[in-house]
Amino acid sequence: MGKNTSISIGQHFDSFIQNQIDTGRYASTSEVIRAGLRLLEEEEQRLRLLRQALIDGEESGWVENFNPTDFKAKLIKIIEANE
Image 1: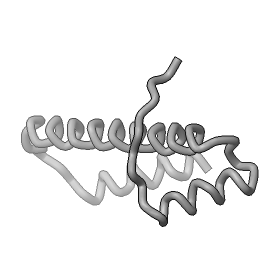
Image 2: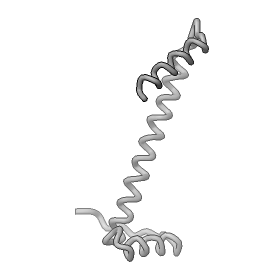
Image 3: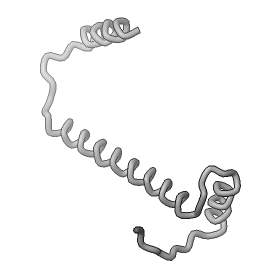
C-alpha cells in the first residue's frame, strides 16, 4: 500500500491533472502523479547513463592512427548493410 503524501502543485498542474482524468486517460490524480514520476525516473536514469558514458569516453584516452575517410567509408557500409 502506498503512502499518502500532501503536495502543492498550483493551478496549472491541477488543471492538467483534471484534464487527464476528464478525458479518461487516467482514473485518478494518483495515477497521473505516478505516471509523471515514472517518466522522471526514466529521464534521470538516461542522464546517469549519459554522464557515465561521457566519463568513460574521457577516460578512454586518445585514438591513434585515426583516418576519418576510412571511418566514414566503414560507416557507410554498415548503414547500407542495414537498409
